[in-house]
Amino acid sequence: MQLESWPGSWPQPDPDKRYLLYIHVPFCESLCPFCSFHRVRMNKERAHQYFTALNRQLHACKSAGFSFSDVYVGGGTPTVLPEALAGTLELTRELFNVSGISVETNPNHLQPRILDLLQSAGVTRLSVGVQSLDDRLLQEMERFAPYGSSANILQHLQVAQGRFATLNVDLIFNFPHQSFSSISRDLRLLTALGVDQISCYPLMPSDTTHHTMDRQIGHVGFAREREYYERIRDILMPDYQPGSAWCFSRKAGAIDEYIVDHDEYLGIGSGAFTYLDGSIYSSTFSINHYLDLAGQGQSALTAARKLNRREQVQYDFLMRLFGMRMDKTAMAAKYGPGWRRCVRRELLLFRWLGALHESGTEVRLGREGMYYWVLMMRELFIGVNNFRAQMRGQIRSELEDYPVKVE
Image (cartoon, rainbow, N blue to C red; front, side):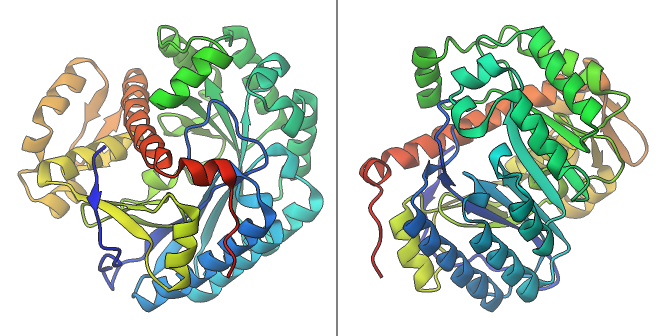
């Protein structure tokens, strides 16, 4: 993914549109060797400064004319400072009257005090990064010591069960030493617990993370990926229905990832992405630089790329069908009647493969086509993760030293 330097101004919002707001919190208590997201080891003083900067950016978004309907908070681990996070969420509700709030967390934060704070702050979907319930794999991932054994994780999940409209559990498949029986056991335990939603992601390492995993965990390959996925799909359906190709929900109407449920979104925080009016933007990956820019009420956007019409149609084609269906009428309204020419080859190929089913008003992703979309999304995110690795490489000394900005 290639982005060009951006002067830092806010994109012009549509005054009649309510967007999704993505908030990135990069701090983690432990840095997992398989993770390619923008994250740094927890530093309490700098994290407090970071939440203060986020709050300033929320006011700046309001002044710039943005309106938001929903919020997604990702990381990192957004709940490292639960009181600060709750304050940021309450400010978001006050400024924008948002209805849906989704927050990511780790199992060790599923404590009554933290859960009470999140409930009071209006969280409607809590997404827990479990990754696996196999103790041997948790040790290989370096998650056993900081986040607990599978028995501990299940106890924490029971504490959180029923507190939110949606409790989501994230799992990752295709680890080097993972077995089919291991992932099957994970799914049986979670379905028996009755969690509302299970998201099963393929391993999506950047090139840098790929090399790290080869050295520390084992060789990462993709030969077994499809069989893993099809077993997951077959175990979860029909009790769980796909809201996207890799997210399965027990009840209808449960929200999925923001890229599925919203065609445009604004991201704030270090390393956050924005997609507005056919352009992709990236915030600075330097936390010190972010604190400076946000403290001045600036956007902190430092890179951007405008997609051409064909790329925009292809992006919507990928995202809408990742969410299982694409409204042809909406595509024509957005891009004009010639939108099909931009994805003609894709439509022909996937119809021939039996992946897509077309009716009068929509194109649907069929059961046999779901893996193709997982494969394409995996490649998309590996590209994004390589961009993250490139940006993080430019601030290596900051990531290693974790200097605290003094105001």
